[in-house]
Picture 1 (tube, rainbow, N blue to C red):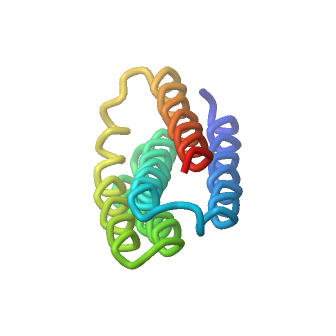
Picture 2 (tube, rainbow, N blue to C red):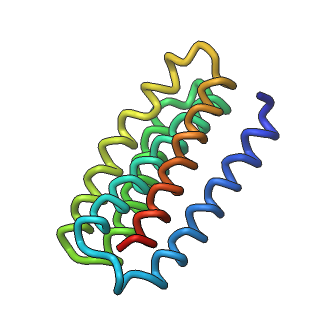
Length: 139
């Protein structure tokens, strides 16, 4: 996958997460704290994982900076989704995003087939979003 396609995918992922945040914000009164905790963990973790892997594939020799960026993104996304519900969910999303943000560049360095791995990650991301939407509808 070339760099332009990865940059476009990176921005599309960000817009999807932002739109999903506002979608969840509309239904936050209907969501229990257990589902809210799972949402903050899933979104913070996926944001950190996608950020770390995609940035490392674009800039392979900037490992330290990408680790800091992916950790910060995971912290912020997990915290934002967690703040929709309560402080326990906030802390869980924050720490999960930080841990996955620290580990995601390590995963990105050992990938042998980056295109296949990117498709796999985005498939997991889409399945997470679909599962969360179905869970919200049933709650």
